[in-house]
Image 1 (cartoon, rainbow, N blue to C red):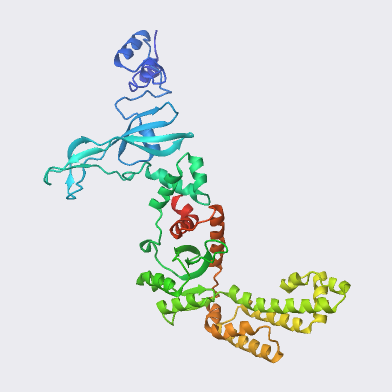
Image 2 (image 1 turned 90 degrees about the horizontal axis):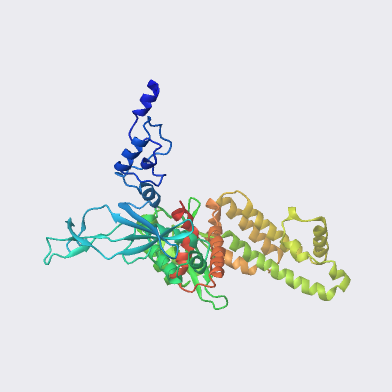
Length: 474
């Protein structure tokens, strides 16, 4: 048999390129030198270029597995599946030495291995996966008695039954979910899930991780409906990002003031305003901590709620009067008046406009109060300066006084008392909408978790729902 020069060249390619079963790991005939010699004697023709590369036994055969595990400073020694179908991956530490627990010195004298530990890791193909390791131990020659220290790895915590990556995965699953649901999905104990949350999520803000605070928002929420056990929710708005700062415990001025004092001075300098409803203790606490120069902003929507409540009181009074004075048929024509009064003028249908026209014909005072409400709303809607807003609101107050209406008396008292806080809205047109929105989110969290009465757990759950995806999603 003769061969071309091209075939001879192919025959001189690297030795581990072959179709021979003895050299290819995809054939079950082995990979030894003896097998190779037998097959070369049996097939005396030049070898054909490799399609399936043979296994190089001099290299780590689990290199791909190590990349997938993404665990630093370990090498995979063995993988197996136990009787229950769980994947067990045995690893060995490649780090040498550790720090002595007693003196802190670097020690490198081996002293066997510590107790074997099994750590739950990320599941593989729907199977539970565990990492098995016997951490090396080292003896210190500097300390009296030559104590022994077990090496500490960065990818798991001592006494923790899980790897760090698995705990991050559990935290990600907890976002917008419940502890019970995560426990069932992962076949993990309820206490194990709560333990991961407690270890990984602090019960208070980490000031070192916060660069600045632009706007502080204060609001209140009841832990249990009807029990009046209110707690304060302190948040911050920085470049569009909302961050939970604290759940101090109650809504007393001293409690809120005490927390605000814990904010580091470097962060206090970055605060541009404090946005709050018109609850006196919140406003006074902020003034005592940040000083009179700090801009305290009364939430615009709470302001609107006050004067609309006064108007609504007049509406109820007038509707009761008209019900007594008008016939049942005439009063029935006023059906839908409440909804029409609360709508914006441009969104009213022709039918609703007709209802309002008929209502105002029976009650001129209600028409006048309605116009005053719309006028004040338009002032807040306008893009005007603080000085211009102050002038327009002053004119509005005078007109209300001249009209003889007394339905806005409660609002006028609040306006007199909190005039600066209300006018401050027009500086940057900042509202407490972010705090109110978070308030609604907290209510959803409470319902989802069937109530949370522990304020530390409440802080952790709020933090997870706000920051969980950005911190733990890859």
